[in-house]
Length: 334
Ligand code: NAD
Ligand code: TDX
Image 1: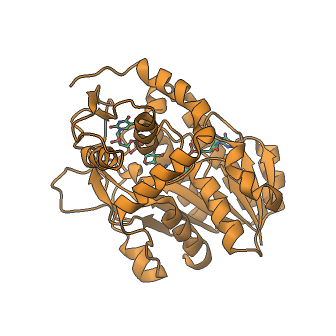
Image 2: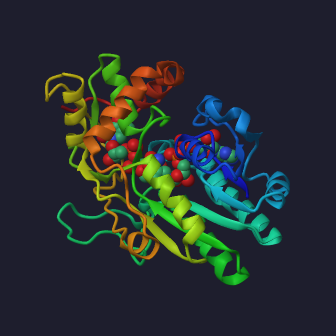
Image 3: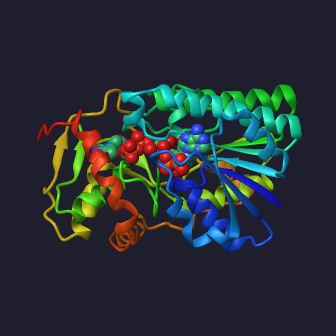
């Protein structure tokens, strides 16, 4: 099988490529990645001689058409992925997330290639802290940020191309991932690398916002399950029952670093900050038989801390510019 992986130099895509090369020797992987600030060639060093790497833009129609024509399937991870950046400048989000998906859809349609679309639970908006309901495949779309609005737009394009043109597509909407190779702008790596540097972790607003954490390897195993067993045209929600509030995540990290429980700063809240995400992944579990392997969040976090301690040369160069971007809008409120 010839598999085109877009965004394979990013966090989830790189982990997906590692998992695929390790577990599926029959799959020939081609990565298409623009190597934006979020992409890192070094994330693929360990598999460099087992894959083909193409440096290019998913919104480049001619390039995408050629690569898709040479593939049996596409998994589309490439995106602008950070909410805070989408508030500062939404332009690349519309370009990459909407136009990039459009370009891939036109190519898979032209060459009748199987397509899997990677998306997020953020397309559903947010939930109240005490809402007994969780997101399901039939929850109405209600995105809050420019990032989630562009992801929602791309999902709708995929659904339309599947229905109107018979494109052989599946979609997945996953909750918050953690694990190795995640950019230091994101919540968990930011706090881990702050703690390594002796800087206090920073919580937006009250710290009460809840995210539904899943280990990146569980997400990627689910993607393979859907590629192999999913029904065409169908959407699957991926989640591992991992709801934790941000304050508790920081509390666990402080404990792992042997620091005081209140050794943290509360900073300016994110505008439009979604309160809570929660996934009901019953369809994926009952229809396709997927179950998560990483059930203990604390030990998953501990392994992630170890990875950032052991791989400082991977993240160090990005830390200063990420913190500089935060400093432009963030101030300590408590
Ligand atoms: P990331 O920002 O770490 O990586 C994105 C990758 O895409 C980078 O390698 C970047 O260079 C590449 N890229 C960006 N624009 C491109 C373009 N125009 N052409 C080609 N490549 C381009 O993102 P991530 O966290 O790994 O997220 C991957 C996907 O998973 C995204 O679609 C995201 O919406 C989705 N997702 C992420 C999470 C999460 O918790 N991180 C959760 C659910 C869904
Ligand atoms: O320094 C911080 N302090 C803080 O309290 C940062 C960077 C974040 N936060 C909060 C905001 C969120 O409530 O932590 C939570 C997680 O923040 P992010 O890592 O920015 O993730 P989120 O906005 O939840 O979006 C993530 O999950 C869904 C990914 O970035 C998206 O790509 C994915 O679609």
